[in-house]
Image (cartoon, rainbow, N blue to C red; front, top):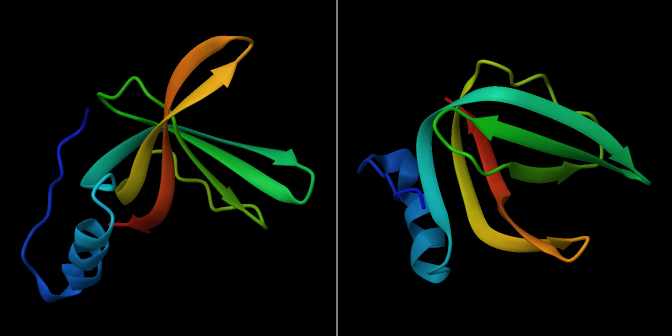
Length: 101
């Protein structure tokens, strides 16, 4: 599991409030994207990120295609989740907030 990494700056006040309100929520900063894949699912574009040093995919949805994030440094706020696929459990990270750092 990844650690919560927060610097005490005025722009992270919103993140700190979210973390206090939602105890399962995790925030990580300066994470480098190794792979970014987008696929269409009905009206949504499903984005999957692989982060350097992490073996778990980070997944988020958008109505429109998102910019290519390969090689970018990101600040991510996410929930760890378990997804069942063909009877097998997979750990994923459901991204709720993403910012390019």
